[in-house]
Length: 278
Image (cartoon, rainbow, N blue to C red; front, top):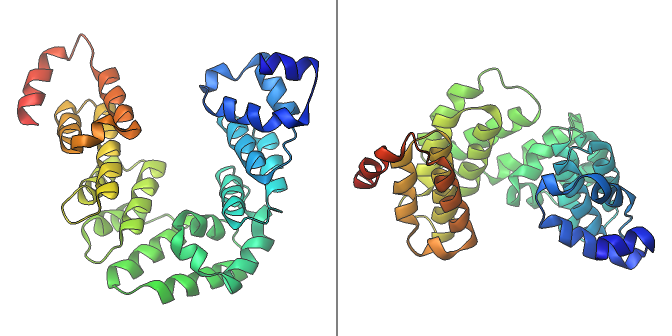
């Protein structure tokens, strides 16, 4: 109803509502007339601009997405600005956020310690001043040798120096002293660069004892999904079993759905063995 109403009677007040509705839709549902509607939207708030940019990026409308992220750079809310910057970075256009990032590495270096993905995006600007400030912020934040090594890898990854990435990731997967945010970001780097075995080691480490429940559950969810994607049902069921009461949460549902989709007529006979092993 709202989609049709906007198409016949465009109302700027509906833009935010449509962005919210579209955010719950599958990418395949955002085609044809609905995609035309999204491309015509001009949200008034920076948060909705970021939301629209993320939606347009999901459906490969990268130029239109970049326009929305650029608009949101002027936000007064720094959390929204961060999302806009990371949105541009995901499109390969981090350099367009250089003025904001250059200011932040000088006045708000803690942002890059709190949000390592923001730091990677800053490195992707390839701007010497931004990279120098980022390197200084991360060097000051490191309290362990493992943390220094992790920061160095993330900096090099951001600026495209990835020739020895695989052995460095493998070393960090078991190196002492690496912080939880670093381990989680390294797992993301593994996913982006095609190192599933190292990623699994990182997720298993994060799912281990001594880490906060939320950390363990995030890792177990990704572990279950990754194992299901490779047909490792024993690993997937082990991760699901360790989720415990996380089963009833939204992330638990994601993990269960991933495992369910991995079960086929061809591997159903192996499920009993997988359950026994789990």
